[in-house]
Image 1 (cartoon, rainbow, N blue to C red):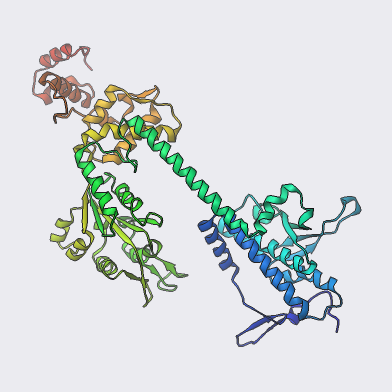
Image 2 (spheres, rainbow, N blue to C red; image 1 turned 180 degrees about the horizontal axis):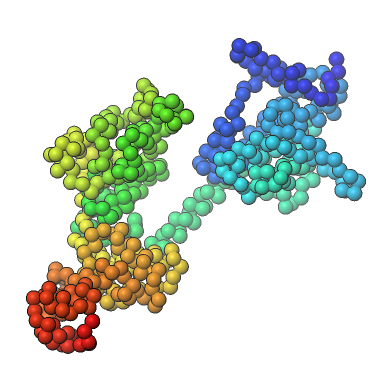
Length: 546
């Protein structure tokens, strides 16, 4: 019996109505959700990069096309081999992957390529747009691979298809052209690489080289910032002149060599997360993920799902299984910031995970083993919280195997100017400004201020100063008001100051805080207004009242 050229899905697809095996042209097939394929595409791209993902999907399609051609050759009684060769496009349509429209060419269009067609309703372009948005290049990788594999098998030589138009990059329709390998121009050779098995090795080589370049750039940047700040370069890019901070970094590096749980304590903004990253980067887990979560920023109802994951249907809105952050950090480090804010009910579950090294997703009865190094941080005094029964004592001791106490910036005054110069250099580069440094007056005010927000506040102050600076260096007036009017510190530095100089600085600081109001300043200093005017004259200040 001759098979009609127009294949019919009813003739090719067989299945049992009650379920079970499905056959297409006598070969077993399975049904795949296109959204699932789209999610796989996104995962491949996020994990391996665009080049490697394209190579894998192209070769997967090629193998599928070749296998389909082999299976179809003997599955149906073709009238001739030409029908078998032409059936590839129709099979593509019957399988629901794309709707094919042959291209009709006129004599004036020149010689026709080996194969040419328009594709409508490409599932691959649809899924790429859904999960990744508009691309710069054609995206129907597995579909062109299928067409190439089918035609290569049928013709006994390599036939490669490339898209000239693609809906995935914003074109109104997808269009493919197929040619024997030798007929493609030299300019298309780069696209044909995705059919080669060496494509993945090439992609990995590119990734390796990119990482090396990034490391070189980072090393140069750290060296530049170290020169600007005037301190010896630290391998992790940290600034530590004070002995207290040097001890913290030394202890962090020693803690990195083991897998013990670390608790980092200190005021908000002192750099606890940066210390946690240092521990991760200098540990054997550095090649794995560093996952950070702010426990105070997640509501109590969602924190369990965020940390441990959930099963589909576990609660309203749980439309699919989802791994938690413990699973995401498997093999790496999980940083629990603001751990003191974890609700009491969650503390018991967190303790169990730390003890058993396994998590149970919300809505599941199965436990999953995890290999995670936990680093926690808090600005709360946990011993006080334990005494008040707001924090579990057993969890506190489980977290506090190694404790790092990061001192506030006001207790690290020798670190303030080196830090400020490094942060100034970073802000200058980030904002594209040409600011070369700090004026002596600005530097003096930075040392006077108490910095209740610590390093985070210092960074914001320097960024503001760089943004508003009109000269080649930051002046006192470029600093935030609270920094500009800060009174002098009475803590002795390396070079003790005279009482006369300290009195002058203090009087002028109180005057500045009062906006130049001398009557109010004299009242606050408990001196007569005439005495204040006399002192201001000694200091070289103008006598005109404000």
